[in-house]
Amino acid sequence: MQLPSLSNLSSPLDELAAVRQRLLAVKASLVKACQELDTQIQALENVTTAVSLEETSPTPPSLFESEPVPPVDTPSASPAPTTKAVSATESLLPTKSVILEAKGPVSVDPNLEQATLEELNKALSKAFAQISSRHPWAG
Image 1 (cartoon, rainbow, N blue to C red):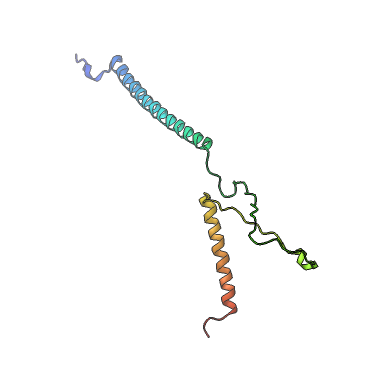
Image 2 (cartoon, rainbow, N blue to C red; image 1 turned 90 degrees about the vertical axis):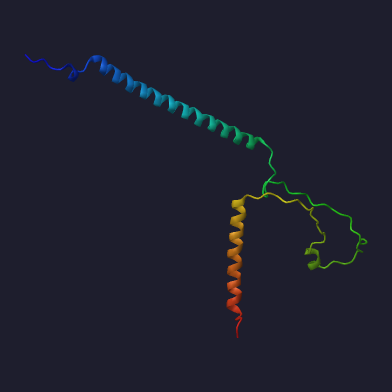
């Protein structure tokens, strides 16, 4: 009588060991994923903290955020004008000169600056094309 060899039969312990190994591998990958998530959350919190600090820190006003400076009246060096008859057209002309204070450089949003330069370039190109079409440069 011939008995089957025992090496072809699998024992329940071998199957349990394989399942255990698979579960340990899944656990290790989950631990690694959790560590990566913790790192990303920490980085996100650092970015959020940096952004909130930038928002609360005082920044110099941009070009359109600054308050207008009131005109400064300077005493004129010339003598006071004499009284004379004023015609109707002269009364419409401004009689007071306004001198504005000089301001330091103001930071401008780079996108606004680029858009302004592009708009200015288009306007100058159009004006030059109109002028050059009216006056032939080469005769």
